Amino acid sequence: MALIAPSLLSANFLKLEEDCTMLNRSEADWFHLDVMDGIFVPNISFGIPVIAAIRKATSKVCDVHLMIQDPGKYAEAFKAAGADVLTVHLEACTHLHRNIQQIKSLGMLAGVAVNPHTPVSLLADILPDLDLVCIMSVNPGFGGQKFIPHTLTKIKELRRMINEKGLQAKIEIDGGVTLENAQSIIEAGADVLVAGNTVFGAADPADTIAKLKRI
Ligand code: DX5
Ligand code: ZN
Image 1 (cartoon, helix red, strand yellow):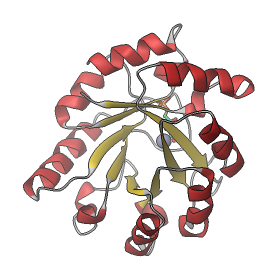
Image 2: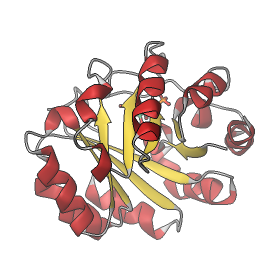
Image 3: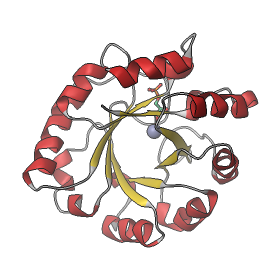
Image 4: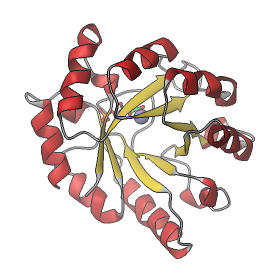
């Protein structure tokens, strides 16, 4: 059974507490929190004070996805805000190994995200150090985009790499996940499904989470 991580990028920011309560009562496993800086990605979302507020509204895992340049500068602040999982982009880190060690030394689980054009083979040397790999199935920056089909091949390849070496890293898929494609994503080897528009755009978000959970 996959973990379900609704992305609050698609939540109603005027009623964030209500959406947090809905997620707390739902079968959602993680809160996926997307941070964008307008430099690494062509959009700006929310940051540290919003995450600190959400932290107070849930005891579920806060899975923070940093789509920012120079994430090492802010790792401590995200820890203080309440992040449990901190994911940085491979494309944003010249010294990725240092960033990962920093995240772990702060007591968080460490993730690396890869853009659609980045081969998962580039993760071979860092994989033993990771708790999570986030495979982007859209170009990061916006919710509600279409799933890029080639992602399925990347999931299968990464699953093989993890299994062959007996590693623990979870595979998370982020972008364009729907009730229709979730099964093929899980069959390819994903452990965590992020879903923004599919959950928050639904008439009954909690029921949609339950349906994703049952796939
Ligand atoms: C995109 C973000 C995603 C986004 C997913 O840059 O990283 O987490 O919120 O949204 P959907 O599920 O709507 O594609
Ligand atoms: Zn994300």
